[in-house]
Image (cartoon, one colour):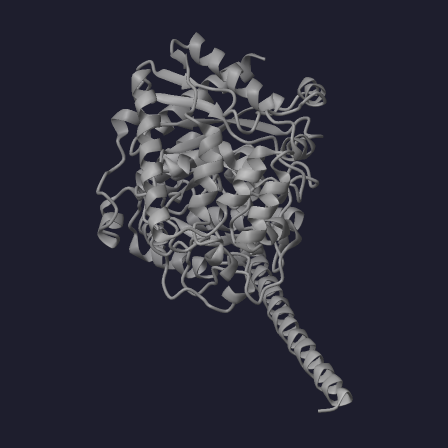
Length: 573
């Protein structure tokens, strides 16, 4: 075979490969364009419905409705002083205004209008009768996509509602929009190539957090009174903290996850939680009160039939509270540290006992357990989601690390070891494990959990107060600092209920102190962290409240106490 013929065949092969790639990219791009057009049409229908209601009710005033807290709103809906139509169309209109500003709504659940009519004809009034709620993209709503920000999930509408949606509807709630998420969910930013970047409602240069970032932005801006998110490493708690609202990750098995799409299918090391997000703790409690009912236990028999424990939530007994200001892995920003210490003082003045608590071996947990658990298959399942997809720039760093072969990650680990030991350890933790090694890891997680509980019991604690990541990061930087979730992912592996409450905002003094921030290791990640939280004066800062497994009501009760004391202090000032 002549050299010229071989050259011609090689050229043809290369051209064919390039053509196929171009066609594949073009096909993906067309699907993205179609999805964006569908969203625009859906939002246009939502706008027309809201306008029609306004025209038919010229005296309608949405402001008083939007100013009500959820318990008050529910009371007025149940006694008939407010109609469900007034409430739904008020929130529809507000959600449209919000999404034009921060790009948080991805779909309009048009069935909400027919649900409204059906509910009126029934006359039955559940605990959430007439309450419009927003839903995270990854929770199935019949007839709508759950995309996870991935093109491959477009045009695959759910055949049925997730159990949690069915129960919310059973209690009279009206799901009306779905909200944005980061590509693949495994990020605490909020951007994907289909629907774009969601912005922080108080500062458009900042991220609202993720992966329930669309929920955080919408609720903070008043476009929803109650939303639902999921949490595998802080995906409820981080956006709630960044945006300055409340949110709780319940114990993993407390609420049904049937119909909730996970970021990494089959992964069992870290326990995903599901939970409500709202502007105040009473709203979270009301939502859980409605969800923990016989209908959920009937629809999903794997959920323990534990109704909401009113006695625990309404208790006023003094608490014995453990606290810490750093996990010794990610040094808290000045405002994170101050938030915990100021809250500690408020709790002590109110008669509670505060005891120093040190999380067990956090460095070992993050480097030897956390990454191993999520990526035990060498990142194969995580990468499956990206097959045939373009990668969002905000996710590129993690995807690039995941794509590296084991030998190259091990080599890279050796190279960076003298610069940063923790980066070196986490790189090798992403390598593929055998089944035996995975079982050994699960044993290690169980032993770590028992060690943690043992220290909790030794100190005779009821709950723990600790930092949650904050203030809001600059857009794009969460993707460069996955380990920033160390304060939250710990409680997914332990499967403890954990919630966040906003308690303060960043001050000029915090910003000045940040200039001398070096972190615990003074490595690349510490430098990225300091850069990420800069320029945040006035942005909210939260604390994290934690209880033992299945004590979700105690967690809420503790959150309520923190919220009450913070508000009292604010009113005095």
